[in-house]
Amino acid sequence: MPVLYDRLLKLKEMFNSKFGSIPKFYVRAPGRVNIIGEHIDYCGYSVLPMAVEQDMLIAVEPVKTPTLQLANTNPLYPDFSTNANNIQIDKTKPLWHNYFLCGFKGIQEHFGLSNLTGMNCFVDGNIPPSSGLSSSSALVCCAGLVTLTVLGMNLSKVELAEICAKSERYIGTEGGGMDQSISFLAEEGTAKLIEFSPLRATDVKLPSGAVFVIANSCVKMNKAATSHFNIRVMECRLAAKLLAKYKSLQWDKVLQLEEVQAKLGVSLEEMLLVTEDALHSEPYSPEEICRCLGISLEEFRTQILSPNTQDVLIFKLYQRAKHVFSEAARVLQFKKICEEAPDDMVQLLGELMNQSHMSCRDMYECSCPELDQLVDICRKFGAHGSRLTGAGWGGCTVSIVPTDKLPSFLANVHEAYYQRSDLSLAPEKQSLFATKPGGGALVFLEA
Image (cartoon, rainbow, N blue to C red; front, side):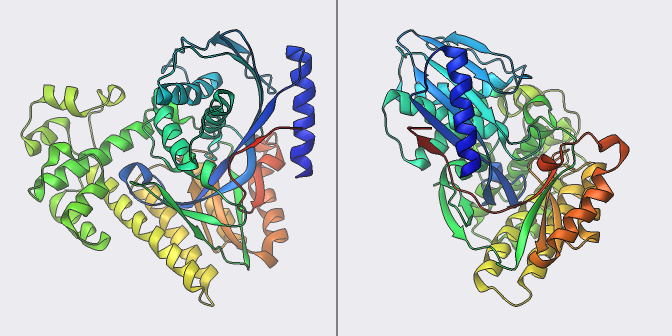
């Protein structure tokens, strides 16, 4: 932890020069890499992430006034202050401080508190932003834990994760709960299978003969600023409703694809067959969906579509459902291989990661040319498997690489991808690194 200690000391100094006092405590929440299980947490399916060593750190001092003052060590993120009892979150602008406010407001509303004390907070993050490693969720989780600690209240890690997952939606992102869950429930040395409703986490022991390498495509994608993400959430919701209707279930209450499977009591493989029967591969128009469900366009817009999907003219329901059911099956296969540890384990896990990328690229359409190129380069230089991780449309890839090939892998990928003229400005340390499973969110009393 020497690097963390140095950062805490530096943060303490910056805090002192900014606020003229010493922090009372510090909170850390890590980012994460999702090894497999992309875009399925908000459909109700299990995912398999691990926490990374990069994190958000916040130095905190409660104050007697109701003023909440936020500062950031990164000069790109301006200072912000507001009244702790009048939190306004602007969904139209995913500004950095709004993610802090999400965590703060989540805890405030959970306890139904109105007369909150203010605080001075100095934030330091070393998770590359818009890279798909959950810098924004780590900030929400960090802020939630900061607020809980200032209030002197207690919650379990699971409760905290659930509150932070819900409160991140204040910013307009309709995500699942993976990022917040792993930030709180992570443990050093193990990945986690995260299951939902009820939220729980199970250790998954990764192969000892391989490492996971993160490579940043350096294409930035801000989830809350683009509609891609929320359109996918809506396409999955609509696919769930059409599948439910096809199977004569009560479709209007259904929100997630997993609910349809649970109600039918069939396997994921059988859900893929139901998808083949029930949905066509051509895109659906709003009018056709209304005909299928027997509702008016007005009902469709007001009762089903979210505010940011009102203007969407085509919905690819078949492709999205196919990705979700096949990806959910890959997560379970991945865990099973890790448990059984066959001799060709690294090869088998790599194949699942490759299949995952193909499905994200072709069926979910959440890749981009740079990610596809980076995945190809990683495979060419020794990765047994490589895939996009995080929402996609930019951000990072994760690759499984035999430990003995790591030095040559890093050198070759660096040369092939990062030494191109248009990328020569990318900071290498943040762009390409091997990672091991880190621990979850913590409170420190001292630096």
